[in-house]
Length: 73
Image 1 (tube, rainbow, N blue to C red):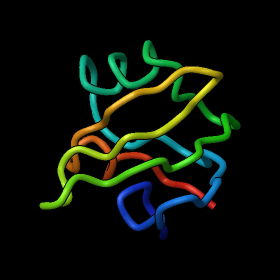
Image 2 (cartoon, one colour):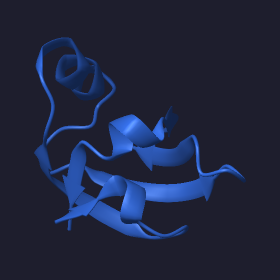
Image 3 (cartoon, one colour):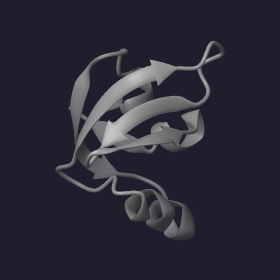
Image 4 (cartoon, rainbow, N blue to C red):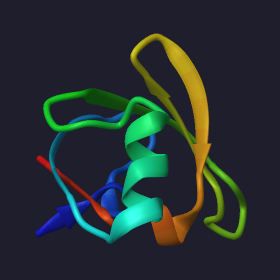
C-alpha cells in the first residue's frame, strides 16, 4: 500500500482510499482530499513535515501523520 507520505516531489498521484476515523477523516475530506482526487506533490519540508501539495486547484500543507492515512496510486 502506497500512501501520500511515500510520494516523491513533483509526482502526481490519485487518491484510492482514506483511512482513519471520525473527525480526522472528515477534516481531510473537507480539505478536498477525496477518493478519485488527483494530488500533485509540490514540496516536502526539510524534516519531512509538512508536505505541500496541490489538490483541486489550490495549495495545501498536510502533516505526515495525515498523509499516512491517504492511500494513493
